[in-house]
Amino acid sequence: GAGVSQSPSNKVTEKGKDVELRCDPISGHTALYWYRQSLGQGLEFLIYFQGNSAPDKSGLPSDRFSAERTGGSVSTLTIQRTQQEDSAVYLCASSLRTRAGAGYDEQFFGPGTRLTVL
Amino acid sequence: AQSVSQHNHHVILSEAASLELGCNYSYGGTVNLFWYVQYPGQHLQLLLKYFSGDPLVKGIKGFEAEFIKSKFSFNLRKPSVQWSDTAEYFCAVNAGGGSYIPTFGRGTSLIVHP
Image (cartoon, rainbow over all chains, first blue to last red; front, side, top):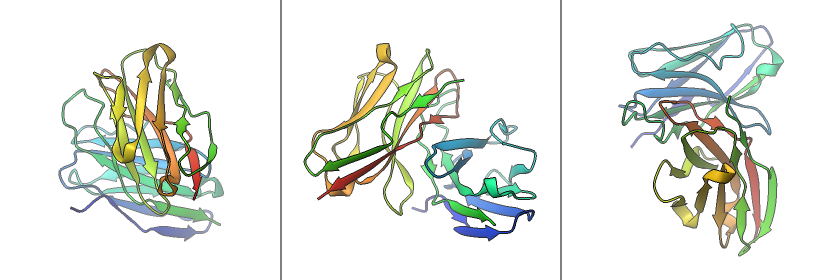
């Protein structure tokens, strides 16, 4: 079946420009996560969506970052006024929340979007 | 806040050597534990996970991990590595009790020479 897809796969932008990154989760997955992966670093949590609940934005590094999820499916991560330190691979993951309160559900990751800010 | 430490950032082995990658976490309560793997050019994928029961967990491709609660550890092992095991390995910990956001370690890069 179809996995998590992300677009674009690569994005090069100039400092100060806005960018939008898209994530299509696996159909039926209610949970969606955005992470940032910098060279030699682990995965840095950015934001989490679960169904129709308010998203957990606790990982967003600044107010230049925002994300939305429309219709409980597709999600867009927007970075305004990009800076060079925003250069990283942005990963999206989804999971099927099998039981409320359980945190052991496997995450399915997309291929990522490599963002380069010049 | 919980943290996850992967002590080995880079590991180089020859085929047939045994592998053990360390993972320690800081959270003192109930935890769910994961190892993910990223093969060159591929997505991150689940290798194995623990949430209850037998602390020795077996995953895909001959990997296993042992949860030792007293040591706050979840080390990954494989008795005999193959060239195809060359990849980046990430340990992740999810605090139990309704936490949905796992904390990931920095990853360990494993290179296996044929």
